[in-house]
Length: 176
Image (cartoon, rainbow, N blue to C red; front, side, top):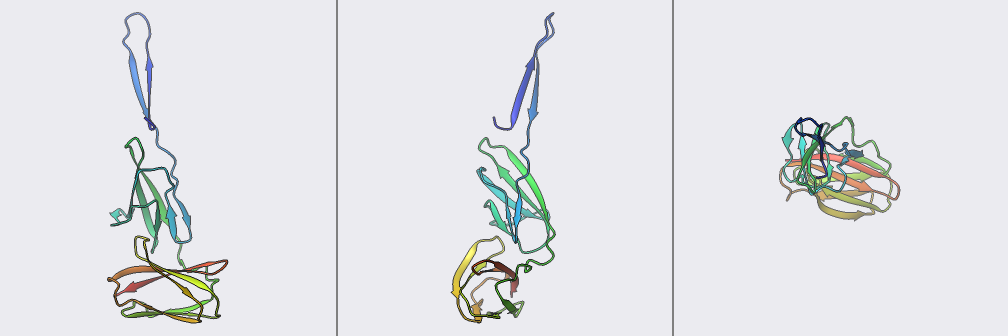
């Protein structure tokens, strides 16, 4: 199969055949793009872990992280072989690409609403992602202030992704 190679050899004079098995492991393919980890395509299944603990629902090739730490993805290839790749996130502040003009995001933690203020009015796309990176909602913003209704969200950690023409801003918040 894709991950195993068998070598055989035989020497004359009654010496038996020797069969050796070599198992290959593909190189890790995890890459980081701002607040997302990408395990690459080509596998039949994915499961992400954070600091050794399973992340429920994180079963896609891309995972949006919300905190620093050790991430592992367990993948299965088309031959049914399982491999694990590790990646350490050391980004101390995922808000480092604030070129979209965000001046404040409050309150954090939030209960009913989260307010986002900008220093200019321009078209921006805002996406709300849950802790597993799944998009929950998307909206287009033109104003210099936007209120996000968080009252119906389950308690937990969320990530806001705001895109302008040439940049992306991420902000993590907690819903109580």
